Image (cartoon, rainbow, N blue to C red; front, side, top):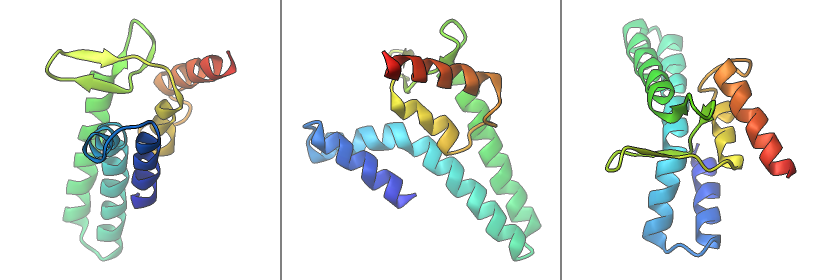
Length: 129
């Protein structure tokens, strides 16, 4: 997960953002996926060590995060996920770019889930244009 965070941070710095702004944007855009992956990995480790109650807590938190992503980051009108949600203005950043691939990379939902397929089809169309 650290490698993915570092890669995203370096992209933001290359775009000209200062250190603070690059860290903030990286956490904003990559953070939820990294957190989901970390919770899932923690659950698997806990289960492997016989800590089934702890594993269940981690999996519940991961499930809650997945549901929040569906509830907050998915635009029914656009039929795709947004890059970010601004809680201050309650608006979605509906820019279509490769960062939306994080939905697949961090297994937020199964690859064949309609929300995922619709999002990825739009990303492919935009990148091909």
